[in-house]
Image 1 (cartoon, one colour):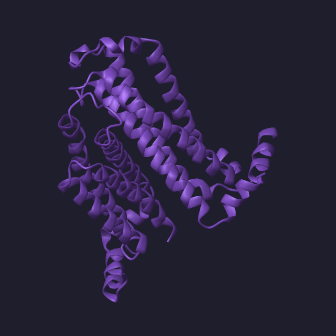
Image 2 (tube, chains in turn purple, red; image 1 turned 90 degrees about the vertical axis):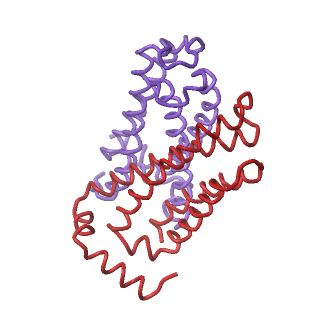
Image 3 (spheres, rainbow over the protein chains, first blue to last red; image 1 turned 180 degrees about the horizontal axis):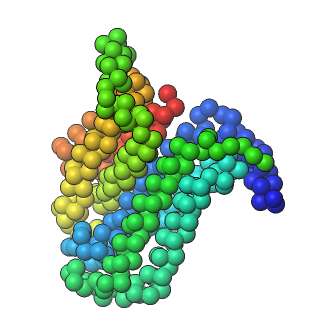
Length: 171
Length: 147
């Protein structure tokens, strides 16, 4: 299969080989990846809990979002870069791991959910004020969906680590 | 630190029915680790937002006390979840954690971070220090698996 050849080519690159063969490179990049993910998920949760009406009600949703989102995007960039490096070191096995695939389905759904929110009900965020009743129901549903999807991303990510080496090597 | 008494305690803990159950039920550790990471996410993002306010970088149009009141309770309420899920991992694999120098370092960093969070308020240096300690805790947490 074409894709498998590509994955094996990625694994054979210099940096992928270095990450795979060096004893401490993988754990260092993995630590950065975990740090980045905690900041992505935690900062998104701050916004989601505000939109649902459970926390930070003394700050307007629009203000809180602009406080938090730059951190979210910076952390997401770090997570994507470190994640790509970790992936490259064992690309074939990661790509064929069901939990890893599920993680990216959830990640894509979280992105889609965010896009729908921003292009739809979220456009009125500046008018939502500081009372929980001011947040429309569709926005609360989008926030709850976001929380569940990100919990799924973390869970499937952790399960990938436990199942990766059990994947039989077939080419 | 690795003493004979600690090794004996780890071997004893490993043989307890609770530890055996955790070891033989394959979903327990990944589930508990997922909850542990989600709890760390709550702490890390709260510490970051609090420290960015202390440093005068984010949300400076609101009083410091309001930001502290919003994020500091998250740190305290999340700690019991971290300790409970951490305890499950320790009971499941005592020697991997308790006798591990990286785990011991992580616990020292945790004590320092709790101290900094509890006793110090204003200065900018403290903001940087607390963020550095929590980042160190996350790094040490991941490195436990490699020692």
